Length: 183
Image (tube, rainbow, N blue to C red; front, side, top):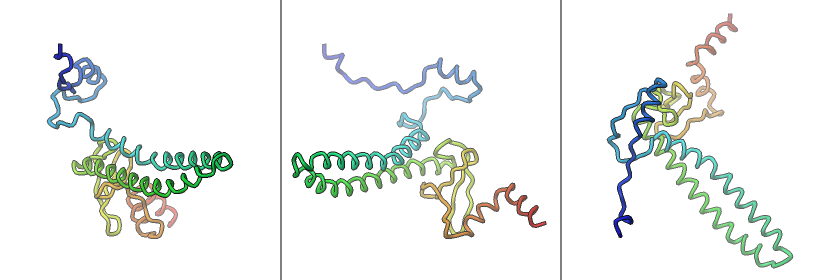
């Protein structure tokens, strides 16, 4: 009677009919099981962590808006509630900042996993490495995302025009336009 409550190991293998359907569409799929014990695609993990880290500040803002309207509603009815919410909100803000930093760290850790294999963490395509100023960055050939070595998404600094111009010099279309306008 207790046999039905025993834990059975999960089978993470892909059914053969799914593999056959993907191969018929021209995708190169290996039916061999993965050598890692992690059942999820690392690219999927990065995309999930990035979406979670990007949407977390909006969720925090929504919590504070709800707290504000709750305090506003209770101002006349029971005045201790707004004071209580004010005191709690200070600690909530610190907690939300800590959670946001942890989410960003997890996102960078998931990105570093793909960057170690010279693959884009978002789309698993090959990446190119180059230097901008004194910083080494890696750019995806397919989705054009640029990452720092530590996994953080690279953004050009508007205060350093030479970093932006060195990024533009790699683009053959922009270099042709500049030579045409110079003539």
